[in-house]
Length: 344
Ligand code: SAM
Ligand code: SF4
Image (cartoon, rainbow, N blue to C red; front, side):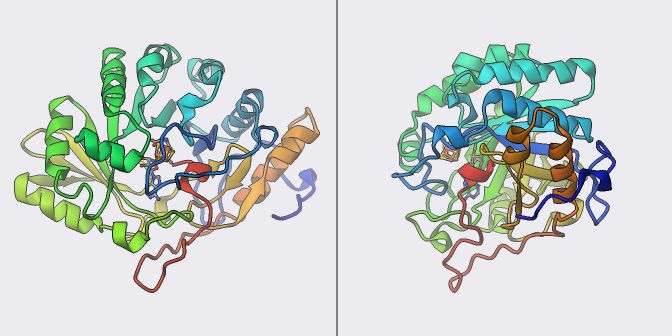
């Protein structure tokens, strides 16, 4: 981590623009590293979680998000770990909703495993959340148990149902796992689109040490797409989010399928986002180790000057892109931290 430059070197709240001219307008904020599932590609069964004192309070997260909004953030995605297992999490959504009401924030969303959605969907909608991403890798309850280890399939389906009743738009995220769920992608698309839900497929990324070898799990999405194209007509569309997803419309259903391909297709050129861990560490790129500590400037002063200086200094170091590799010769993760730490 670099030392902070003097705050005088920066216009305090100038919009965040990186050295490649990319404006940072989207933040993903992990509110906890804990989770009620133990998905095989994400965590080991026996995880050691962070001590509570290291984790930002909800008030500190609100302050951090508000500072980002001050310097141009228009979209916030709350993630984790499982964001909805964090105690009191609705107070954060409730307080951030003031920025939606003022129009300074365009979108507040979350990525969730769905286990707690039945409890919280109504309140999320009430706070101005319009869309949620729900991770669901299979429609088979036994497989679901094998993938998530601790998850309950019916609870997630009840959560999806509650989210629909609360009129939240839903996108299902499916991690493509070789030999695990690769025979049901077409069925997942047909089911989801039948319910008015979009689907994105994700390649396994080499993040963190887990029990299984990555190469065994890795399935390039070119294969997923080719399989879907045997069953459906796929029309490429230009819709982009600034992220790694490319989208196709399924002719038969009218629904969208996204392909999130950090490995087979480099997506960094349009990157508009950064990630913040629940300890206030800012990662300028999901696939690189360089980071900036925002907790220290947050906790050292009630004024935000040092925080803004830290933000500007970090974005000045945002790298051009990542260099993920999964192959037989590369068995170590590209970065040691788990996805549940950085926030998906
Ligand atoms: N717990 C929430 C969930 O599962 O949706 C939010 C956090 S989770 C880390 C966010 C997303 O990252 C999920 O869609 C999950 O499937 C995905 N993910 C986790 N580890 C991954 C990995 N190693 N490669 C690719 N995707 C991963
Ligand atoms: Fe938990 Fe999400 Fe990771 Fe699964 S993918 S273990 S639900 S954080």
